[in-house]
Image 1 (cartoon, rainbow, N blue to C red):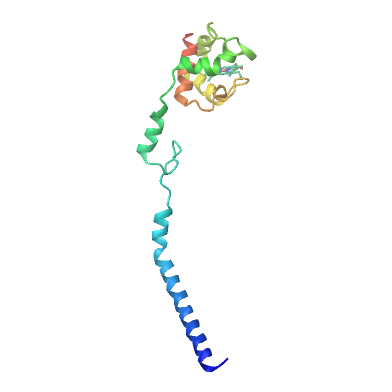
Image 2 (cartoon, rainbow, N blue to C red):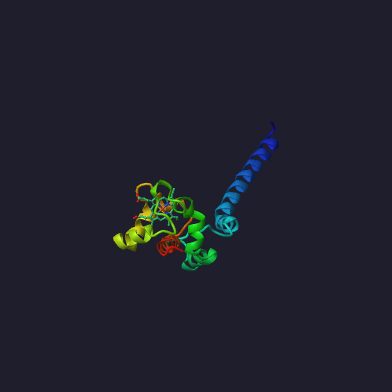
Length: 144
Ligand code: HEC
């Protein structure tokens, strides 16, 4: 390699290093821009999650609207309580009202929510809110 060629190689190497440095500086300064550009457009907000804005949580809660006690009973509880499966207090008889008189609504409700002997927690209704379960219990106590 002659001297001219060697100098040319050094010059190119220096240039290359310079470019590399420049581009890493640029990368550092544009990180924020990239984060800004790729950040999510929206965020999933689980109801009751404290990191969600209050307004968002309220909107989620009111989006579907609570179902009535009758709707919950018919859709979720009647399978057992309609005919008294496994000894479930039968709807349309005084059985639920009798339990209400004996234990009070709070106990019936907490047993409906948490389960009680063969009564499964929430009557297996995973998407029922506490209020909806309460409406269903009241509907059953009142016998329809
Ligand atoms: C898989 C059958 C089944 C389903 C579905 C079911 N229940 Fe029950 N439930 C029972 C049985 C069995 C009992 C009686 C438990 C006992 O007294 O030992 C019972 C008892 C209850 C009681 C009385 C608890 C107490 O303290 O005496 C309430 C209230 C109740 N169920 C509410 C509901 C509601 C509300 C739903 C629907 C959201 C529901 N159940 C769905 C089987 C069921």
